[in-house]
Image (cartoon, rainbow, N blue to C red):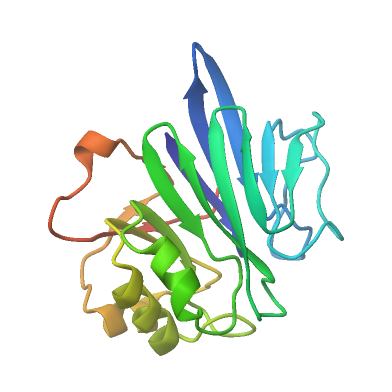
Length: 197
């Protein structure tokens, strides 16, 4: 699968569905910082804070914005309720053979039960920038608790404070990350800083 960061908590995941290409779009919210094209063609849309102010695409996607279990377009999704006002729903989902978790712009730690559900995911999208989402130190605690194989920070203008908190001096920097299960690290965590697409 290919992962792109469109800014704030917006992530685009492109994957293979049989012989066809498909897209999951997470948090396509309109803002001054993010220019999301109305021509996006997502099959699945995940929303962490409701459907107000989203950018509707060219297709009529399967949209998930509530806690619960869902399966559509070869994507299995579990939504979890949180106490956060900035991300009342977060997600664990499987695309191709990778398990991912997206925490939206969550602004507080997860309860133990929810954190346990996310433990050991392959890919974690975690907000690290403060300003309405987790501060660097709290995000670092959450990463330690979940222990992903690949970490992708979101909701930041500068990830330096967060990287210092987790002890990463040389993250991978990419515009579009290609992730495959067989290429993931076994015993370590890879941190990827995506540039806005």
